[in-house]
Image (cartoon, rainbow, N blue to C red; front, side, top):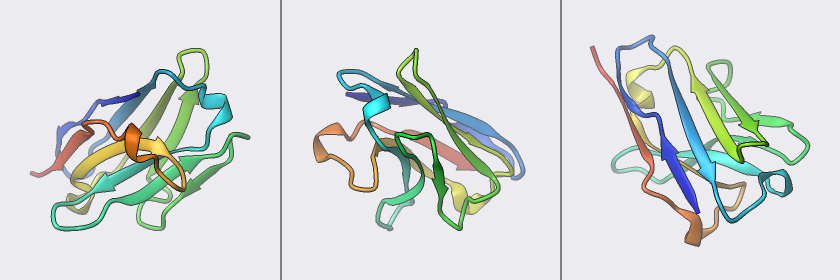
Length: 114
C-alpha cells in the first residue's frame, strides 16, 4: 500500500516535501504520480515519473514542483516550491496516469495561508 506524509501549513512562497512510502510493489516497475484534491473539485494528477525516470508535470505546477524517487527506499517524493493558496489540497500518490482504486491512501494535507 501507499503512505503519504510531509504535508502541513506554509505561508505563500513557502516549500514542502511530500513523501510516499510504497510497500508491496516495486516502484521501478511502475509509473507513479502525485495527485491532489481541492475541496469541491475532482482529484487531478499534478506530477508523475515514468519507469525510465522521465518526469511529467501539469501546467499548474510546472517549474515549481519536482517529483523524485529513492529506489532503495521504495519511496517517491514531491518537492513543492513557491506554494500558493491555490495549491492547498490533499495530496495523494498512486499509479499514473490511471490510479488504482485499491491503492488510495489517506493523503497528506497541504495548507497555504499567511
